[in-house]
Image (cartoon, rainbow, N blue to C red; front, side, top):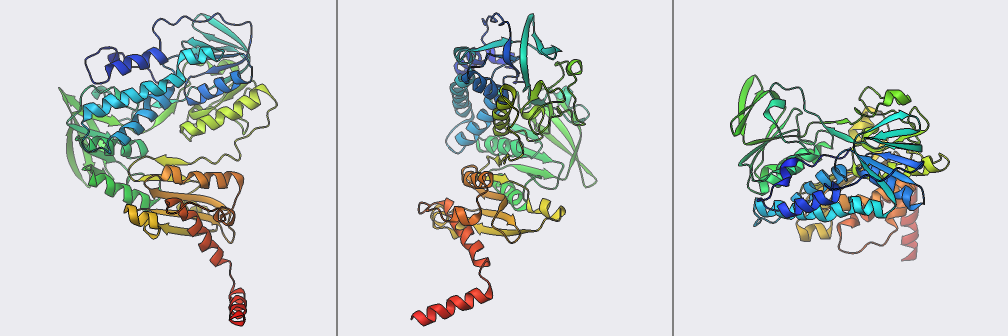
Length: 493
């Protein structure tokens, strides 16, 4: 479900407090009155995060009667985490901006975007919104507080929540997580970050640019351990350029808060280091949120990771109940949740024909430069013994790259001997935009030849598509074909 709105935000006297007040009014109004439940709903949606909001609004737009239950604030990580983190990264590009100014603007942006997830907007769309913890009574009855919602179909979209690794003293040190980081009222002088995946790297770079001393700690041997090694090297260099200290291949054996500071015991190469910080941000994993749903009563099963088991139609082990987003997927991304929402609405309201089988989900790290990945990495294909061809372009080969001084690369992987794209990695400023045409090509099964025929504006970084297509076409010319073309051209002179 969506993250709670910490009570500390209710007091004024900090930069952007008025925007926080507006945010709370929109996503968790204090004077909200529950509607009177209808006799029966076409769809009850549990969870007001990205998947739940999208499912509820789409179903209502089709004329279905819809109830949406949320125990905390509307919007989930989309409003409380994703938007603030990307806003902070964008704001930190301005080297003249102070921490307080950046957080004031962050809170202003969050409040503006929260209007899209507001209770008022949902009610105006014909959705009955119920605040409170939801649980199943039986297959077609969901209880939220004292309200009992009869329903034809139910969608579970309760998302996931941060979990703390089992480190001595960590929980007692009151670390910051995704749900509380952006409630900081003043800048810490020193910030330790545990976990160097996407969010850890993004926050490290943004806070360092805003003048905070940042130490990034990662158990793996490189930052972004799930990405292409060259991408990891590029981002590590960018983080160090921003002033981030990086500790890799280390374990944190203990954490202790002493007054206003936190000490981390870091074990590395037989040596113990003591890292002291004012705040600790933990970005080291999430867990599906299913604890209050009473799933056993309706026969909905969980897998070993605690996720709801679904089939390709996103039906749970109870065919009257569907699931969408983080609660049933290892791909914990807002756009994946939105794609799930489209599928469950079609299947829950009509015949179950939409599936997840052809979903192509890109993932992005919004550091500077950005990293965009779609499909498997080359290393994953090699481990699976899948034959593939590799086409790599450096951005400094492109005229736009030269005039911008852009560094980075694009790597496109295709099925061996064909132009069918099966994966790509982009490291560049704006990589999250550059991956879009590849996502479209993979979804519509367009090969390199087809997308290479498009006329692209000059000079742009998107020309990497044409360069890559040309490289592919040159590989298709056999020695015999090259000799025939040469003979023809000599005859024509």
